[in-house]
Image 1 (tube, each protein chain N blue to C red):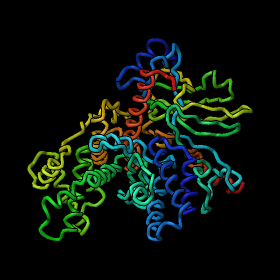
Image 2: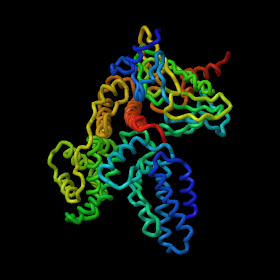
Image 3: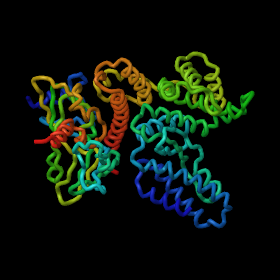
Image 4: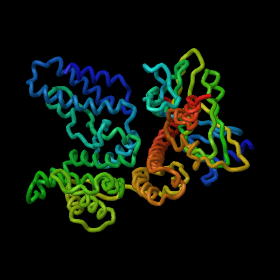
Length: 206
Length: 338
């Protein structure tokens, strides 16, 4: 894999070719740096809330009713320029403001910008080759103080890597759980195909 | 009435994204407070009427604070409205649990102004309801253009004038209802082209004529004649009525963008102007129908449900990106001082 840098990164983002890195909207070309691209905080949020159920169940259970993961999150929206307060130890799901489309031979990392990491907000996620959508951002405040974030501010940075081969993300339904989303989605960990197998393994006799 | 006042006050403490709605709500609270403070001076039938109107308005205004209304569609509606109505208006949407779209024509401000002295509303409230299930489906919300057509008709007196100018020969109530529906269909077609007829076909293709609505086939036929420029006496009738009223004529106020290269690559479409913003709904419907039927790449591996979700999301995000870009451009061109 090769890190895409300098004019190649800029050229790819500004191009409208099918095999380019597509980003919409690019509000300011200054977002494109020598090695990374700054991306902005989106406007839709899913805020983690405490419910009567003491934990989120993920294990497969035949016949038993299970509280949906989405019920542990509350949806809210802000406008660009509005404030969003992130409290200590709170999980908030959001996305980048930008819609991203990656070619099938480009993989990307998403990291919080240093300025935000210093406040206690760490983001560290990856984007599959061929990904389409607003990039999911899982916010967590590791600090002791609530932080006022501004919607549309440059909160994360992305670095892109060109691969030797292609990865067919679109046609693989197993890994396409979060494809084409334009707003944050709750975890679908409870839909992992391994879980029923693990449940069966648990019930089988040694 | 006290409970209603509490409800409105609670709503006012949840921020809206729209200053005109906030202003409207403040006026409403002031007016209701006046009624509460002089409750015994009002006849009971008046307080009943005020309470019912305000109660309904609270339901619609509640939608505006839910942070879940289709802001992108409402933005498009506001653009369309500005071409017909000069006076300031605030659109508020209620999310319904059933599958009904409707426009509620009684403006609470007008009711209160009638009974409460010294109360004046500087904008009119447009109350539209839509199914909660479709809040992220801008293609289905093409129906809201039709509902806006009802508001424009009511505000500009299109059908009420037509009933005097060309009275129906028989069954006047049914004729009035049908005239309203045809006008609102044509209004929607001015902005969304064939999308309104594709929508009607998808939800009520076999609906026969009723006391409130013409048969769906007739509605679609009128829209298609209008869009293709085929002479149609119903279309001509409305053009004459609008001319008599000094209102804009019915014409295509949209440009259908070529979204195929972007949507085939599952990318948003960069909207160039307002005409393309409305036309995106037309292009989106045509694209959706083709994606369903042809099952070509990149849609062949996806279920209909997934295709519908992704295409609607691309439309919603394309509109939102246009809104964000305009705001950004406005802020950078006019300085950043608040």
